[in-house]
Length: 289
Ligand code: AMP
Ligand code: MN
Ligand code: MN
Ligand code: MN
Image (cartoon, rainbow, N blue to C red; front, side, top):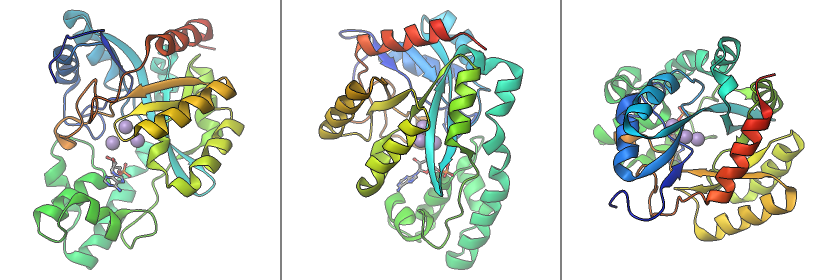
């Protein structure tokens, strides 16, 4: 994919080393600029720590950087990801509020490591080595298992060990979805249900209903893991329910080498301008409470 061709790209979902991405904030923005991304939201898991650094780089490189994060949230006993967008997230009290789930992650990773060590001899230290400077996640445990030859690939590591219901699974600490929506409102921002395509088809509609019930402002329609059929059906849903439609690559740098900034996997992440404009309108009228 060459950058700079056609309309400027909009990517509203990307990670840095502040969570489980592989790039420093300025590296992320340089990659975005090279790919032709004009508007980039930095959405690390449970932190806004990289936004300021990315924005400084964006000013040098001509990339507009929107403040955001991807909160780990719970709906009943299910974990979902919720993208929050809004300048108010940078206020100290809200920047602290989004870190709730992050603070519980160390204990969770230790517990996953203890289970895996017993199950297949790959432990916490192996995953830390894979993660390097990046915040540890299940993806790193999976890659450590591949490196040790315990499984053939990352998918098998999740299917056999790490996914919900499998023997090394430990639930991620999260904030209730209603609380995630409340944090966004306090920030004068919006809360968007991330990648519904990652949910099992059988529970997707129920989670979407529950998220709308909880006051979600939008749904991530375009995503590197959403095929054309799903994008169409989600676009239909947001249209009927009067919700915002967002999208992004979910770029993680070298930690997910098949996902490219701005375009995702199959050039299928292109947020239409009218949807970016609708988001901008909401962010402009919101203002920190
Ligand atoms: P964590 O935040 O520790 O729960 O780990 C989430 C990470 O694991 C993210 O990078 C996900 O993309 C990745 N992940 C979750 N489920 C799967 C799966 N079934 N196959 C591959 N990667 C996955
Ligand atoms: Mn991630
Ligand atoms: Mn996610
Ligand atoms: Mn993400």
